Amino acid sequence: MTQLKHTPGPWGADLGVALDNGQHAVNADMAGGGPWRAIATVYVGRYGGGSKAVQPAEAEANARLIAAAPTMLDALLTIREARDRHAATGQLPDGYETIDDYAADVADAAIQKATA
Image (cartoon, rainbow, N blue to C red; front, side):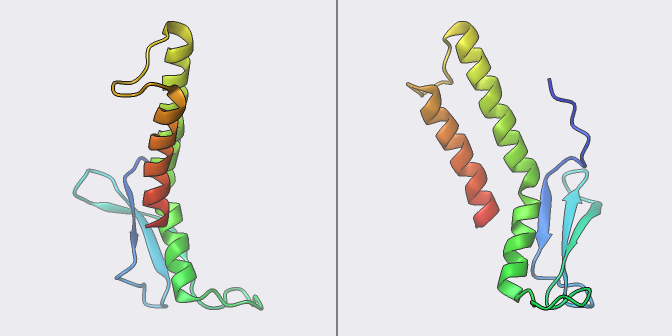
């Protein structure tokens, strides 16, 4: 079993509530209903004297991708566990004929969250 050291999810991207400086916050819902805990700030515009500005749509996509990190990690761990169980016992998750189909469905769900 993998020892997880990061802030547990779910994480959410606060896209509708930009910070005072126009940035977006990525927060974790620590108790499934609050309180929220700050994870990251996604910058919009120029930061640190950079020459290329981050546009608002790109910043929102970055925030969604960061917020989906726990879901993507969980998907990878779930796929690995199912693969290992299948290798050891031949058992497949219910409703699946191949481990590849299961892995694709789990991965697709995580990708959907990261890119929605």
